[in-house]
Amino acid sequence: MEPTEHTSNAELLSSFAGKPAAELIVRDHPSLISLAHASFDELQRYRGVGKSKAAAIRAAFLLAQRLGREALPESPSWIRPSGLPPFSATSSGPWRPSSSTPCYSTAGGG
Image (cartoon, rainbow, N blue to C red; front, side, top):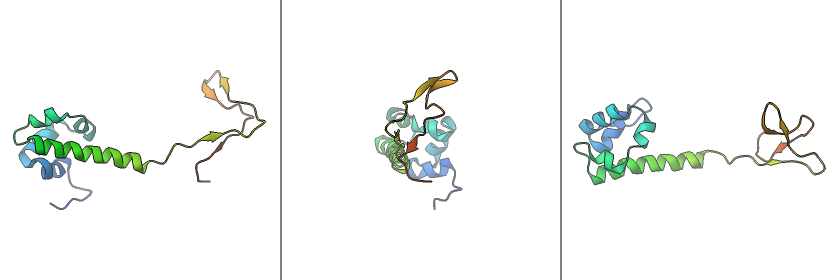
């Protein structure tokens, strides 16, 4: 199998668990979020999935989580130039800068 963008989740999972087990797992976990929450023990309940295959599936999701954390840019830090008033509460919601308080992001862009 050559992975492509159009490969189904079951086809990708079959490289870890074999086709019959992959089809059952995807039937019970139709979304990747659901599958990502499947425990090591739960995965081993599928016929043909032992410790090794369950560990490989869990490892794939852990790697994907780490990739997501690395790929997301850091949250911007908001700074307020000295001498300007601090953030104020508004009746329309949580703490926000007042309309006269300029804020600048330390994140790049522009």
